[in-house]
Image (cartoon, rainbow, N blue to C red; front, side, top):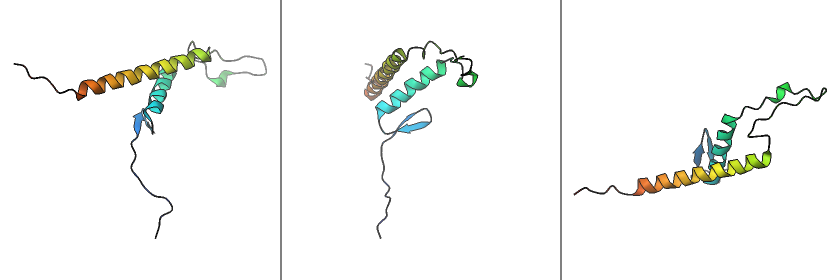
Length: 97
């Protein structure tokens, strides 16, 4: 008897409470969450479209191009920090003489 859905093991990466199949996606999610944690935009609930009032955007989200560049820069920085920590842990401690 053959199963329609099979089971297999895969490497996953965690960022926050989510799992990702690639490190790049995990780094991007971590960067996006860091920006979101510092965001102080007004919620869209306060928008009154009839009178033309739109909620205020924070300094991170007022320019979406800048926000995308900041997210990419943070993701690269997280990757750099992660690889430098991995390299330091891989080295064996040197014996003192």
